[in-house]
Amino acid sequence: MLGLLPVVVVLVTAAGVRDFVAGTQLLDQRAADHPAIRRDWAGGGCRTHLTGHAAALGTDLKIVQRTLGTRGFTPIPKRWTAERTCGRLMLNRRLARDAETRPHRSEPVIHLAMSDLMARRLTGASTLSWRTPVKPHPSQIPGGNNE
Image 1 (cartoon, rainbow, N blue to C red):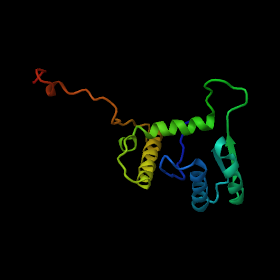
Image 2 (cartoon, rainbow, N blue to C red):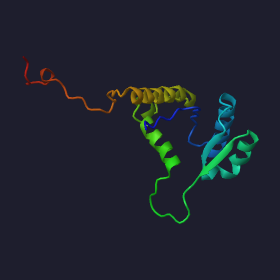
Image 3 (cartoon, helix red, strand yellow):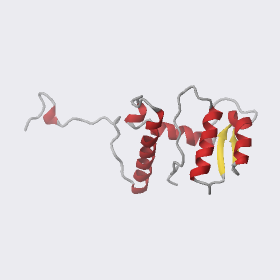
């Protein structure tokens, strides 16, 4: 399995925006752009606010939450997918730094980053990341082999 996750809707907000407010905007945008999708996933904190809104849009909203009685770190598959995706986005220099002054400018960069990830997985190609250390050629090292 390649683990391809198509990015359908992206919303970048300021840190102070409440989850249910952003979730409402995401549901509205997804319903408008992709009406054929009938299932959405949300975290447990959005249960009371988004369930009714999703039902009004004709969407089956599944709440992802931890199993009762579990202690310590236990990965939850749907949440882990979201966390792993955020980690992969941080491999892109423009998303790892606060270079953009407006949140909506980061949205196309996220689409580009996910398209690049999907293309690399489909083709099996590996590209250098900006974090990958590159060893200099010996001729570039002072006192190295200058032949």
